[in-house]
Length: 382
Image (cartoon, rainbow, N blue to C red; front, side, top):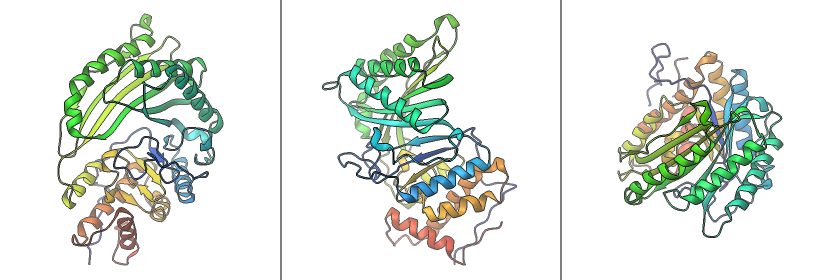
């Protein structure tokens, strides 16, 4: 019999970092994400999404999240990981309160090739899609819009600089964001082979400085004397979980909009993935800001690319929809992060106590977590 779960709420076990904006990411259907990270079960890659409407479980869990956030009078970030065109109409979640969304992310462009792509045509088409998303689904102008691209190689060049520049100008000229709003363009290469990152790190650092640095300076309101930030590429070698290269550049423009450009490259660790590793990885997420990911197979307690296949981070839609309002009734409005931490901590305990000899897939672990939470052996101290 598993020991009762203990929570010392007043002397909390959780290192809660209160963030101003919770985040929810929506994967509306199977194989819907355009980014295409190699080991991700949610990536579209060569399999086209055939769904025309959002998965009903995804919609129901999103509605539970939206109600939870609305009752706490919080705004949130909404990231949409689905198709990029007007076929998305039935896949974007139905929202009862559009005004809660302060930041919206959509349009994941994957492996765009400079060899066979007209940068100006692609930029024009992308701005039209951004405008369609922002004017179709929101009655108000948003503070922040973000989009991502997976480049054809790990280091950026003139093609990426021109593409970002043209898209940003289009967004600002059309006034698609609220006054002093921010356009965020993320360049992301997730879970690449470590040898490739180590091979290209010198070129990555140089090209970030040359192309992305000059890009934001082109937008900078120099007369302001402020509003320009850049960074040397930070390279974090293998820490037992992943290696990462990251750079961020920011400029405040003449008309007071902001442009932020980031380039993030993550490589998987070469460490053997076993039960101990999965538990350690899940514990590393405790204390982070709320960032649920809602997908057809279930809900991630916290979405992170390097742990997408870590079963500890997953729970069923039934658990999520039941526990969000239940836990909400137990804790004050300022403790919204704690609710996520409790669900994840319980998963860690259940996983740690399970028989290591029994092999389960991620969906099977999701069902197992449900069985344990519904079991009469499972008790809380509140």
